[in-house]
Length: 308
Image 1 (cartoon, rainbow, N blue to C red):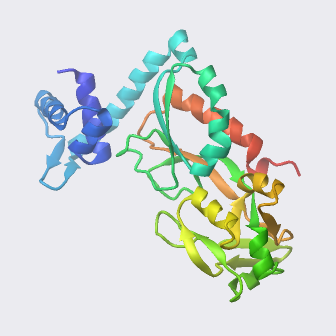
Image 2: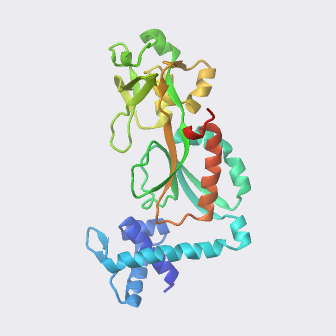
Image 3: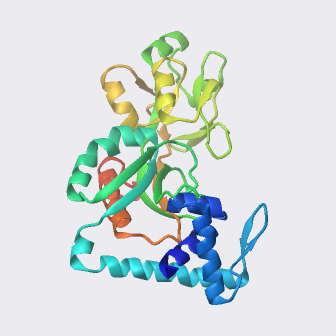
């Protein structure tokens, strides 16, 4: 039995809560994972996991062993990458999930530079707005807008999405130009709703002008949970949009969208990169986080770092 493989299999079972999911993330059979853990328990002469037909729970001894295993695996990774050649040339597969519009408009156009700089990194980029089970789906990190409320993740703030309210010219000719956020609740106005992927509720927006502050829900006949589809709905004249400025800029330049209520400030949305705390930040992940942080600092700098 390879002790490294056995410890890695055990750690992944603890993290995913399932032999099947652990096998999928390690790209081996469930039988292999089961045998590795069994051999590890036999060598240690202690039960690490309690198994039932429905779930897998770590024992007290297993929890203590897991904490040491995670540190040991991290130390082994550091040892492999501490050599000057390995440290200078991050390598391996990196799985990242980002919002689809961010991927399309900012990340993917800039990726040739990243991949040219790190030719030995294989980047698997998921572009979606859905919630990701990082451990279960073997994803190294996600980039998300809004506060990260999952206590099981470590989050690093890498930008603030400056935003505004926008609508298609055709919609404004039909419904009129709103002169106050409150009119978006009137019968002749519509918003396009954006659905929170966590709970399926439509996201409200807070606007401020001087001392006046108002939270807008608006009336919607359509709500979507994907950023690209949300933008398409606004371009089709289906209602007023809340959009990050980077998504709206090209469409404003082509007179496809018009900014409305420009004298009201929309609270910027924080942008985070998040990853599991028990997964070692490998060199390849570290260089990606540094790269994407620098990229977004150009387009969506953190509010506190903006020049006054």
